[in-house]
Amino acid sequence: MDGFYRFPFFVLCYIVFCANLAAYTNFDFDFKKTVNAYLGNTEYPMFNLWLINVTERQILTILNLFLIKSWLEPSKKKYIDWMVLIFVITAIILQVTKVELMYLEQPIIFAIGANMILFACGLYFIGLITNEKYLQSNPLRLLSFWKITFLLFNYSLTYVSSVSLLYLYRENPSLGRILFEIGTVLTIMNTSIFVLLVAAPFLAKYFDREPYHASN
Image (tube, rainbow, N blue to C red):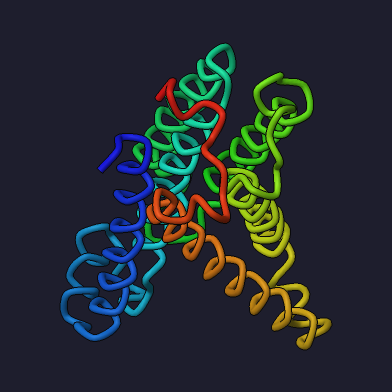
């Protein structure tokens, strides 16, 4: 497999693994209870937030940043490296110092990660309208364009809903459910695009080669 498509394949496998792990933890209560107890959570042994925090809001955020990096022009890749480093160090400090516990909501870590993703998406779109290689391409035939677009919508929505979801459920349950369902649909679409990224060599009729394919 071409190295350019190997990383999306790895991320796709990671997403599948996490989905199965989440299903297993909901099936094996003793395992979930043991992990919660190890993390210090004996009051709410049914909670599964530790898994979401680690696999989705931390590791997947880092993987998405590296994915975006692969589509940026070389001069902008360094910004992603710095963001990943800052994010990892900040997340470790906040968890080691127990400012944000692993088994509870982590609004600071999530907000930092979401804003970094949004900034990285902005770097991509700046290149899309200013870089000569991208100006010569048709964005609608680039899988990177669709992936970045759905990442932008997904993280924007989850960032907003994470701040206001409980309030919306209390004041307007219908709107709260709609936001949650839209987030679920966007997650499915983001995962589907990973499948397309892996299958891209066989879809040359529909999608063009990425402008910075050779530089990765």
